[in-house]
Amino acid sequence: MASTLGTASPQRASRTSRWAGPGLIAPFAIFYVIFLVGPLIYTFIAGFFNGSLLKTGMGDWVGFTNYGDVLADSEFWRTLGHTLWFTVLTTIPLVLMALVLAILADRFVRGRWFIRFAFFAPYVIPSAAISLIFLWGILADQTGPAFEVVQWFGITPPSWLGDPNWAMYSIAGVTVWWTLGFNFVLYIAALQEIPRDVHEASAIDGAGPWQRIRHIVVPMLARTTVLVVVLQIVASLKVFDQIYMITGGGPDGSTRPTLQLIVDTGFTDGRTGYASVVSLFLFLVILAFSLVWFAVARRNQKES
Image (cartoon, rainbow, N blue to C red; front, side, top):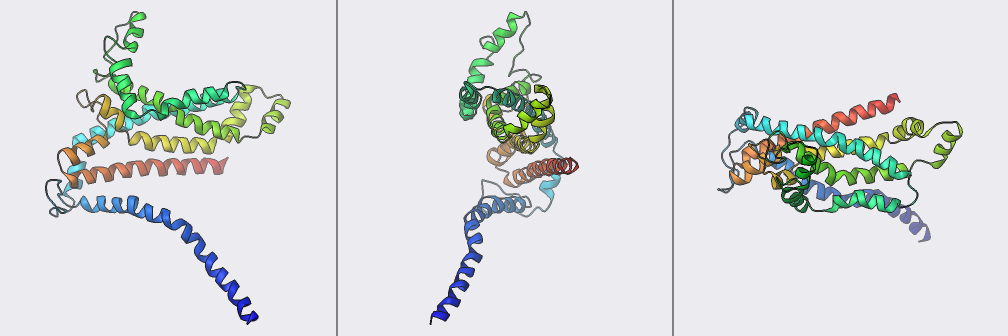
């Protein structure tokens, strides 16, 4: 009997350990399939039908008609251009400014907690509140602080949100101020992982502050920079909230992003099949940017 129990127990333990991994990952896998993979497959299938919110079912089969209509739609390419331009306007300053400010803040010994709080605080403010602050306050024509500051220098202020030449720059500036804290915190956390012994050894070897930043800090933050860039590109390509609430895509559609085109087409016009195709194309653009950046970053790491 003892021998039987002795041989059964290891077998039972082996079976338990074999299912431990799948059991732990099962909740996330179920969530991933239901809320991510499932909607993606449905979006792909819905693109082959002329579905509508005004009637039940998938609609009539139209094949690749929706795909051809989207590719031939000038408004789709226009909104995609707005989205890409917004991504450029926000990604570059949000990465560089976060890196520089994090390096500077890391050098403070006293009051470091207040500096971190001051930079991160705007990020926790809801997008609706941020939009109203800048729409009716800071960027308001004639009465806003930005309007008055420019007048102090003897320059005629533009209509920050009413001029098509300035609206996108204004929204990009709002976004940079609002979301800078997230990247800032990521860099602060990465800076704390750099051993102090490395800084002390380089200082003993005669390296100045700028040389330490250039040859030690920045290279050791390479992985964090890759993460920050990818996250920022994805977030900027999905821009919707602040543009919709501040300008509504105007003036004259000069700030309308692709995600707003999806909302207008799918929920306002009720053309779910067409909106599904636009959503799929935007997903492919985001996926392509992410894969290309990861490939370039991995190649650079291997070479270094």
